[in-house]
Amino acid sequence: MKAKDLQFSDLISLEPGEIKLRGRRLVLHSIHAFSQFRFDILNMLGWEQARRLFTRFGFFWGQADAAALQRSYKWPNREEWIRAGLRLHALEGVVRSSINELTIEAEPFRFYMDVNWHDSVEVEEHLMEADPGDEQICWKLTGYLSGLTSYCLGQSIYFMEADCQGKQATYCRAVGRDLDSWGDEIAPYLTYFEADDIEGRVKKLTRQLREKSRELKAHQRTLEQLHHKSVPYLVEGRSKAMQEVLDLAGRVAQFDTSVIVTGETGTGKEVLARYIHEMSKRSGGPFVAVNCGALPESLLDSELFGHRAGSFTGAVRDRVGLVEEAAGGTVFLDEIGDISPAMQLKILRVLQEKEIVRVGENRPRKVDVRIIAATNKDLAAAVAEERFREDLLYRLRVVEVALPSLRQRPEDILPLARHLVERIKARLGLDSLRLDGSCAEHLTSYPWPGNIRELDNALERAAVVSAGGVILPEHLPAQVVHQSHLHRQMSGSSVPSLQQVELAHIERVLELTGGNRKRAAAMLGISPTTLWRKMKEL
Figure (cartoon, rainbow, N blue to C red):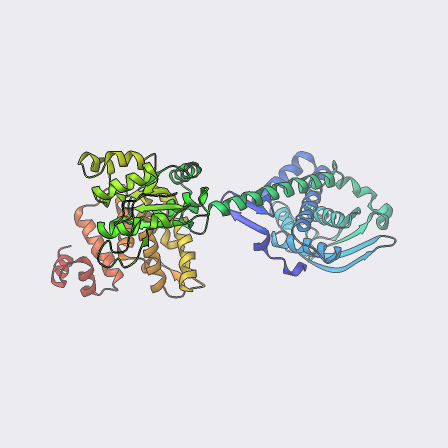
């Protein structure tokens, strides 16, 4: 690893509320605020104490960065390690450094470094509140280089400024030497670097971060096992409602009990069922999904339970059903509310007796499967209307997991949309595809009656029609954009009249069609003549 290869993105992880440099938490601060803080310290403590405080601050910072670089990479030599520290300081936005000379001698140990500093943030902070004077002011920078090099070399290294922009120099320049090479010249300044075992505290921090890193890696492995690639949508469930669902799913997965997943169309019921399967002790077995509403009863019977040769026309050989094929795994019965009373009885037998009977046979066969069912219907109402067996509902609903709609968890829409765009990018081979921030309001204002499935389709459509790989609002389906337009109107201080809403709708559709009245009329479901009349009226 070379210092010049160091990249910001390789070192820094960014999450809302948390910025980390290889496990060490960072904070972005305003130089204006730090400028005021610097002069508050100067006024309260005086020049000498303030210099001591900021030099120690820089010293600890330099040692901590050196430790982070040591944890992260293998450096070919100590000189490259030091250069990496200067590169990191630049990536952190503090200063750009250029080395004039760097000499490290082993026997006897000698160190010399001459460095120029350009665009020092410390100079900028100081000169916001004061005019150039007669003193060197890059205290944090000298502390930083002293701490960095001391840690890298395992020797006491001290830097002093030779020139400073705080004294109207063109740029700042510092010189660093080992303690013996400085001799008596450094003695008056050593007090600025003294602190209570800074190196010991940095080493302690390094040990703690390594332990934390091991814990995080173990946690990540667990997450990778739980968040299998077959259940990507659930990873983006950040809302409280979705976290409660995942918590319940995680707990019920550990027990071989029946589960029914309820929720609107497109909420991801099958995805949640796979999630439960992947987290269960049956994860090594098959996961077999059956859409009960898509097959007629006779075919569903054969598909689920198999048949004997000759049991009906076309049954030329014995066939194993999906329930038997799922031995040791999970059978997911989607749209369970659509099956007939006769089929309900056979499903009940699987749940109660753990056995099936193939079509055309009388001999029961034992099966070892877990049943997870799903429906978007009100099964309790179906029981009241005698369209669904009450005993089957009780058997299925040992645990019910209710998936919330996207309307109930709007905070998940944008993270989910970004995740889907990444999947679409890979699926369609659109390497530069991204979701523009201007789409955010439209996506979060639309009610998504089709939920995740509708969102996925809308984004894929937008990706296909987008130009330049950027999804903009005009690439989204018209109903999505129109809904957010109405939402903005309705969220104002006064409720618009029906006429105003109608006018806004017509204007938006005309905008989407580029003023083409024929296309606009078709989108509105009216004739061009009616559109023209309404435009005149409104």
